[in-house]
Length: 298
Image 1 (cartoon, rainbow, N blue to C red):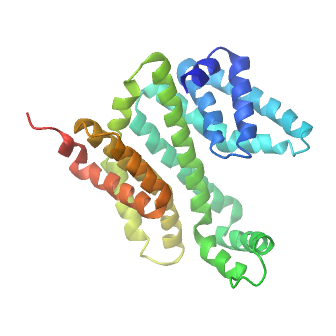
Image 2 (cartoon, rainbow, N blue to C red):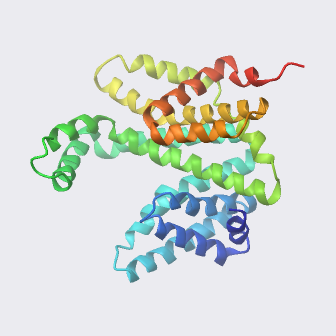
Image 3 (cartoon, one colour):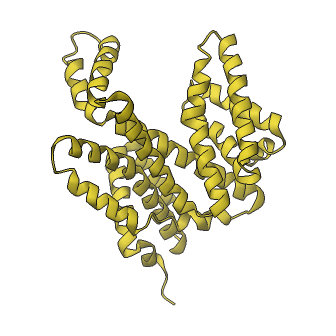
């Protein structure tokens, strides 16, 4: 990865090339979107938002031309700009100015909350919109006679889909920012990101917000539906804090790195259960400082 980051920092053309190539590859292999956004994030962290904006706009133009040549709709490049590159640029500039990684993770949650509100403003009643569109999509992709009714599945998913999309965009931006920050440390501050990530904590303000939202989620009606989706946006951030706690405990206990490999294997094999467990650990850490449990006695 160091060579990749080093090549991106050679100049505007190199950064643009990497951003475009990885963006096009992400249409086949979605995780490549983090590499593409990471280029914009790294340039912004190191050289400021003007240079990051230049890479982003030039990459959008080149990507649109490339899509046109491939026979695809060039408008996808603009969507990519809005969903992948722009959120990372905003978070990276915030981190460059304030050098507070934890605060930037919280700001990622604010981006997700803003997207959720925008969804309600634009769609009026998002659940109805999602129900109609999901039913149409599922009807096309599901084999007839398989025993599942597309309308019923859409009715279950529709109430939370706006929150899921907002959470995916926001958490994707936070993960991409994390990657860019790691690259920056590799090139200019070896080992610096390790301490920064290990100390990640959302803080008690976010903790209280989560508790209030949890209480409101039992109120019923439209308020409950909206607050549940806000919790959907917050949960991945607490999960990330849970990962930070896990890394910090392994480091402080000088445990074998196999523990982390096992954790990530569980995250892949049993994602729902492991994600919830990590999110609960991150939530509790804001009160009890679980990382202190990893300190060896003198």
